[in-house]
Amino acid sequence: MNEDRISGNWKQFKGKVKEQWGKLTDDDMDVAEGKRDQLVGRIQERYGYGKEQAEKELKDWEDSNHYKW
Image (tube, rainbow, N blue to C red; front, top):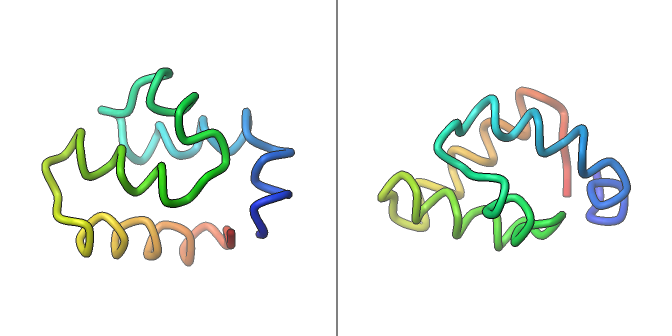
């Protein structure tokens, strides 16, 4: 799924993201708003992950849910 499609379906997408990463707040999701790099940063911040770990978790989640940016 490309960034334009993610942005267009953001409400649905952010619900799925928050199911996976429950520590993310609505404010976190508003900041990310369809931007993958911002979402990775928020996952890092909330979970205390390094960038590589946050990237890997997001990629694994995208692959398992058939999402592509």
